[in-house]
Every structure is written in structure tokens, then in C-alpha cells.
Image (cartoon, rainbow, N blue to C red; front, side, top):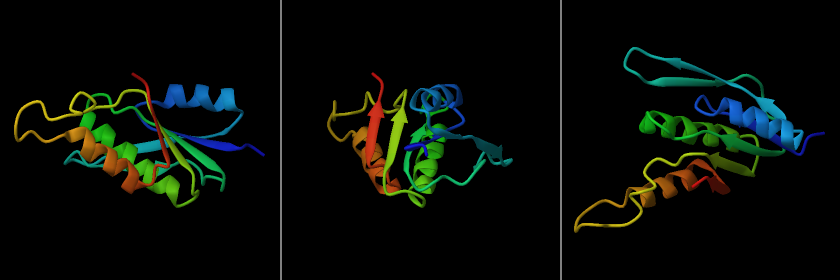
Length: 127
């Protein structure tokens, strides 16, 4: 039995497939449907096994849309496993990691809290 299940988000399916092959893990594809107002509906192609889950999803442009998809996939994965590793090849908002000018929002701080709240137990980002 595979030790990992890899879920490939819409923005990173090729990388997710390669990672699954390398780890000899089960791969689960996602189906993305867009509503007219640009909301997205995500469906997993299969039910994850109750092992460690790796969610691979870049937050490349369109950053906000891909970020919401990533957080949604993490939240769904958490329903199946207590261990959810988020692999984010490009982390949108990463350059907003401190307050450069007075009264600026430190967006990366907010994003980090969202990943934790969604259920990510580990976060791997490529710089």
C-alpha cells in the first residue's frame, strides 16, 4: 500500500503526477468547473486513502483563484487524513512578508494562517 496520496491541483497537475511516480504514491486528479461569476467548483477524481496526503498546487497567476483552490483542496484532504502536506511551487504574496511602509497589511502572515486553518500540517514552498 502506498504511504502517500498525491492530489494534483489544477495549476500543478504535471508536477503532482511526477511527484506521485517518484514516491510510488496514489495520484488523484482534480476536476475544475468555473461558474459564470468566476467561482470555481473542485471535485476529486477519487476518494483518498487514509494515509498521508500531499496537495500540490501553485498559487501562480491568477494568484487569488489558485490560492483559494489550494486552500479548498487542503481542507478537503484534511477530511480524509490527519497529515496533509501542502507543496506550493510558487507562493503568491510571498514578497509581502513584512510591513515595508506604515499601515501596510502583511499579507503573507494572513496567508500562513489560512494554510494552517485549512488543515495543512506542513508547507513546502519553492523559492
